[in-house]
Image 1 (spheres, rainbow, N blue to C red):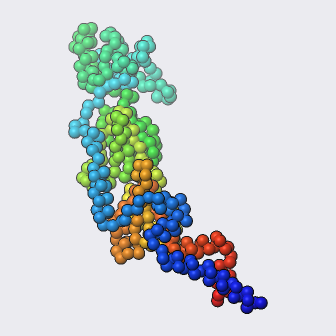
Image 2 (cartoon, rainbow, N blue to C red):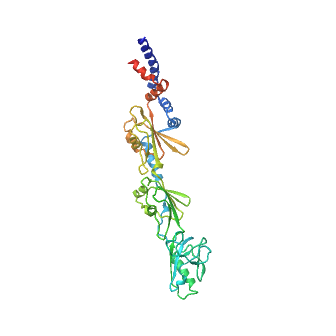
Image 3 (tube, rainbow, N blue to C red):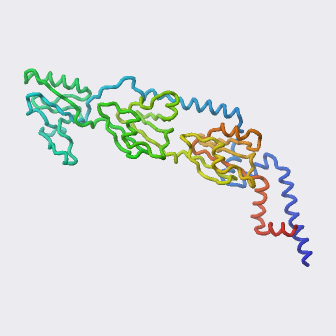
Length: 378
């Protein structure tokens, strides 16, 4: 009876094993696609997409395209000369008329009655003493009344006041400066230590200075994708790339209304899944990560279950994904993989070998029986 049971189990095993081995031996390109379909949603996407082989020609074309994309016209962010600060709405001016102290320290808040503000710095919430330029660009000044002053430099505003005061004072001497810069601001967001508004004063603010005013970049900041939004247009700044091209990032001058966003490196991860030693999400190194590096950080292709000839990169391009395939079992494949650069959100997927797929299929159909069948054959 024991012998009969062993014979039956052996026959059952052979009935299952022989057709599977025949199928594995006759695996073709269609067979590989069917194997992929048995895996995750990623494999289904790969099976339904056109697959482009990763070779030297593709790498050369990809590098040329990346070089073109890197040369974005950011000339609008550079200023050839240092502009003079122009007074605008909301600024508070300090104006001193020599030998006439009664004219100093007054302030006009909109259309309110003029009068000096408290000088106590401990009174929080109060603007500094001075003359306020209202929303129409007009400042109220004793003796001469409303003065259109917005759009003028401090020197131009001083000359205008001297000319108007000359009607009431003989040879007036005027000292004018901006007490509080409140009309021109930029906003910094993202991976900086102190995000928020930054006021632009009479010293032109550069991108580097703006980032330093915000406390500097955090350790997770991605310096390769700093975004500057200006006048409904977005510019992507790669700090290291600018330095490599001989361009000083401090030459980028901030203007009123600019929005600077420093993204996190966590937003540009690459996902490695499938038959690798350690599937994981990888952060890019200063905006760069090659296929070879991604596979290496994931521990490489699983030697037991992975199919080295089916290493895929799934990349979102518009509405339709683009799928690339590397035959890692071919000679020189690792050199090719080192030249293939990944994009943020790319998915690197290693398919299972036909034998691994067969083993898993049998395990699902006959859970616990496969090992017993193998033991019976032995």
